[in-house]
Length: 260
Image 1 (cartoon, rainbow, N blue to C red):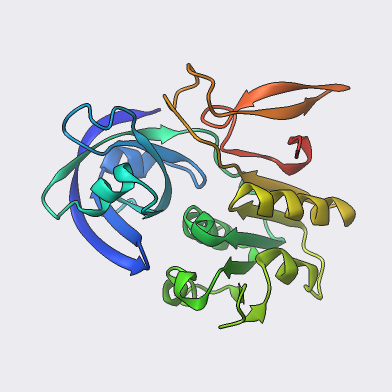
Image 2 (cartoon, one colour; image 1 turned 30 degrees about the vertical axis):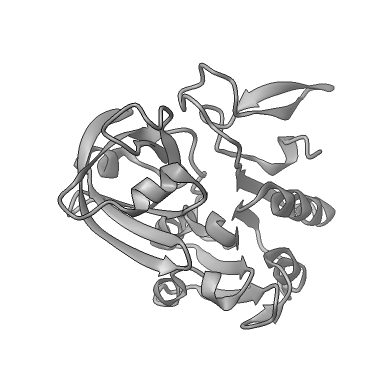
C-alpha cells in the first residue's frame, strides 16, 4: 500500500562524484517496501519543479523506521534533492511499483549492477542473503570513483566482483563482461542499470537459458500509471503490448521485454 508522507531528512552524504545517499524517516514505507520498489519524491515545497522524481529504495531499516535513497545529480530536480539538509522534510509517495521476486532457498543468484543502477540492489542482496541464498554481485561503473558504496557491499557475506570501463579497479570492461566471465552458471539473475546494458545482458542471459528479472529505467511522469509516459513494449502471446514501468515494473521478466 502506498503512503504519502512528509519524511524528515536524517542524513545526507556524497558517496561519489555528484552521487548522494539520503536517509529518511519513513516507518510505514520501510515496513511495507520490497526490494525493487521506488518512492516518488517531491523535490521542492512549491510546484516548481512540477513533477516528482522516482528514486529506487536503496535500503530499509524497519527497526529504526528509515529508508535510504541513492541517486545521481542529473538535472535541477536531483540538484535540489542533493541540497537537502538534516531536519528538512521531503514529501514522498510510496512504496510504488513491482519489486523483485525473492525465490525459495537455497540457490546461486547473481546480481548485476551498472552505474547508478546499483541503487536497488543493496536492499535486494540483504533480503536474498537473509532467505538463505548464495549471492554474487557484479558491480560495473565507468571508473573506480563511480563504484558507489563499494565498502558497504564488501561488508555483506556475498561474492563481490568489480568491473570498470577504464580498468581502474576490477576487470577492464562492463558488468556484462563480468557476467560472461563467470566460471559457474547461476540459477537466476537480477539486474539494474541503463537500458543498453540491460539489453546486452538480456542477450547473454538468453544465450545460456537463464531466468532473470531486470529493474527497468524510463522517464516517468505521474508514477501511478495514469500518464503512460514510462511505457515499454512487452511480449504478449504472439505479439506485444505496452506496459508501464511505474505499475507493471520497474522490475520485469527479462525475457518478456522487447529490446529495441
